[in-house]
Length: 231
Image 1: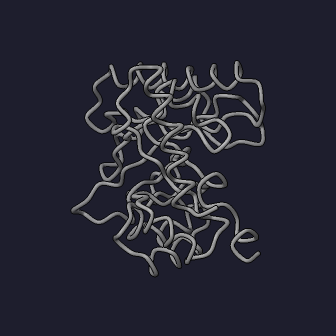
Image 2: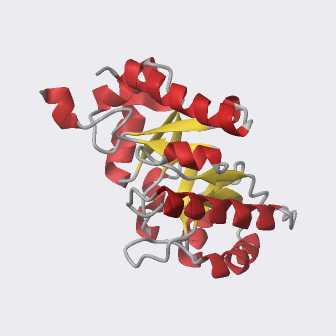
């Protein structure tokens, strides 16, 4: 199936979730996660009307940025090593995986003086050892410390839900992140407005939207895999 048709299907699902919960679909951004596909497939997503692209490997992230450039808003969504920050900092508009002060220090060091870097703090809501992120209990303290890094703006929180078909577990995960975001937003930190929620992927974004997601990260349901492209 074409990326255009996939995008229309994802939009229809998103709009239905918004209708059920009284949300405005225009406030929810679909990020096409292109880490498993070619530059050409990523271009197809942009041509289909996708405005946001997400990558999680620095080298491939720059290859795609160099080929596609400013026709999309770019999101780095994977684990980011401090030593790799300099590779992507000039190209990527958002970083979704800020979870330690050493990374904050490097981002602050590499950022240009004229622009703040929009960051999501990654929270390990599920507590799974396989997932990165600060714990929910650590999140407020961590964000308070980020005030020491003036080039960083904490725009929101990000999480990855457990890989499960249990909708109750998924909903509780997303609800917990929303409640944590609301708690932090109420603090009115100048450096951390914390208005956004990056949560939900191909298998669970509908529930994430119902629970308040403002950015959803869609890979296989939207752009597929290169195996499909080459077949």
